[in-house]
Length: 446
Image (cartoon, rainbow, N blue to C red; front, side):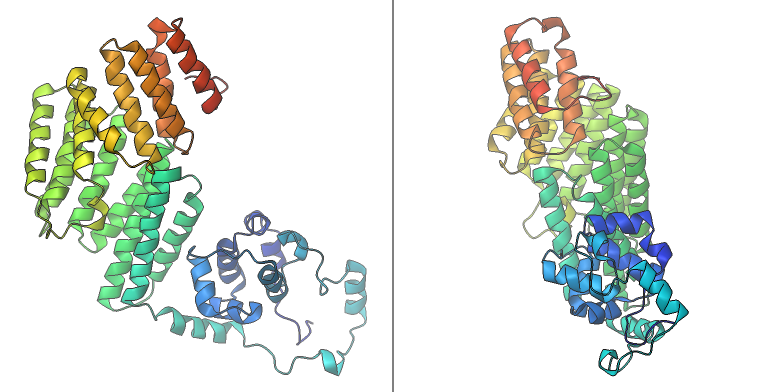
């Protein structure tokens, strides 16, 4: 029979669960708190009281917006939730009773000393559940804006460093927001949550796509479509379909790519207030699909439409935040890439080179990706020295970002150097490639 003055123990099955063990080992308290809630029925408000934290702080941790790093806080979590110190990298806690003594206590229960007894027992999980529900319904427009701000930060960090390290946080926040959707809320808040969940699902799909894990990417893109459909956000559905179209160009499925981008354009045209910037971006994705199919006339027509729509953009247009990246520089470089996909290297090279010169240094993946395309167009024109020099620049940017998509492109470029492997510039590029990019499947190059 547990002592009244001791906090409720966590179930043994939770403390021995590999997921809990791993979460504690890396001190991922977002996962720890979620597991404690779902597996032990200890709700966030109870976690806050036990660990001497504010409910808002616990909520931020669960949502992935805050980390807990201070040792005194970690010790309070260990003591408050009765997580053995060793699981969190701490020394043995004073309340951890040796096994022999625990057996002795069960055989001969001791009456607690008066000074050891708590003045009052803690509320039960059922009361805490009720309190948690009352606090969780207090979502406001400011809360939604905080979610959106965190998504913008994820995208910025994805551009700079790649998404691999972000994935646990993004997936955790996605699942948290999806959980919030199960509760009844005012329509404006509920619709906002659906939109945020859709964007988090799309971001997760993009992270998997950039890692060339295509099946997982497709699953999350599909989830994003379903979430956007729930609130009839046709523009966002078009955006997701365009992402799926781009993925199919990588998987050598040009017909599927064209079908998806055509569906994306249909969704965009069916929406009220679709902006020229969105339509321009979709036309460029159509150009990619046609170029992958090798259709010159259709590619040129789609490029022309993309530029025509872009010229109609007004500063007052109510552009969705997710299309803000598609600026003039992106239009130019994508135009060059579309021509490059067609094999029109002489047309593509100056466009990509101009965009690369003006591109922000912080966008490491974009710079690596665009430098690869510039090197490819230079190689297609027989400019071996320039191509290898540009590809080496791409390697420098690639080394700063975790993107298997970019790494794969640079390995492909090395494969295209086969006829020139003994040339000094090709040998120098190979040496740099070996130094910067790790081998794949036991070999340097696929």
